[in-house]
Length: 142
Image (cartoon, rainbow, N blue to C red; front, side, top):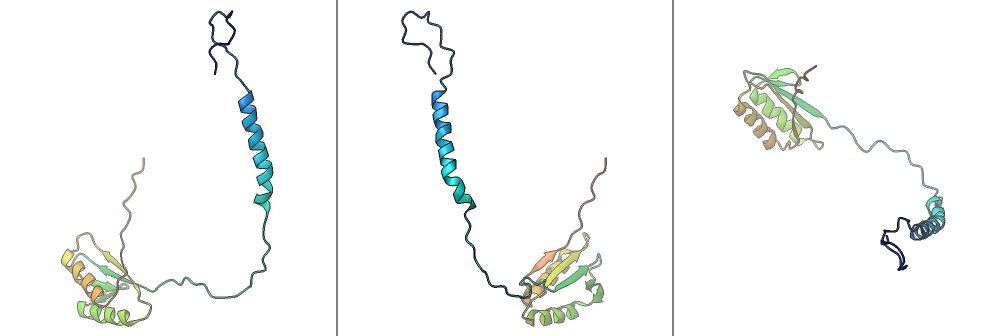
C-alpha cells in the first residue's frame, strides 16, 4: 500500500486507491491450478474385487456379572455364591480359550477387602479383563 506517489506536486495526502493487480494475479494463478487439478479428483480405478461370504470377525465375548452387596455376599449372574465356589468358577473360566470379561458390580458400602479378594481370585485364574459397573449420577432437573 502506497502512502504517496512519485509526483512532487502532491500535497502529501496518502493515496486512497487499492492496487488490484496483485489480487487479480493470485486469483488467476489459483484458477489455473484448479483447472489443472480438478480432473485428478474424479479419476477412479475400476477394480473387480472378489466377493466372499464370511461370518462377522468381531464376536461379543462372554461376560460374567459378579455382584457384591453391602454385607459382602457374592452373586454370580444374580445367583448367590460362596467365595470358594467363585474361585472354582473363575478357574473353569480361566481355562477356556476365549476368556470371559468380568463385570464387577459392588455397592458403595462394600468393604474394599472383599473387592480385593475377588480381584485377586480373578487374577489368579488369569482373567485379566475386569470392568467395574457403576450407575450414573442422577441429573438435576431445572
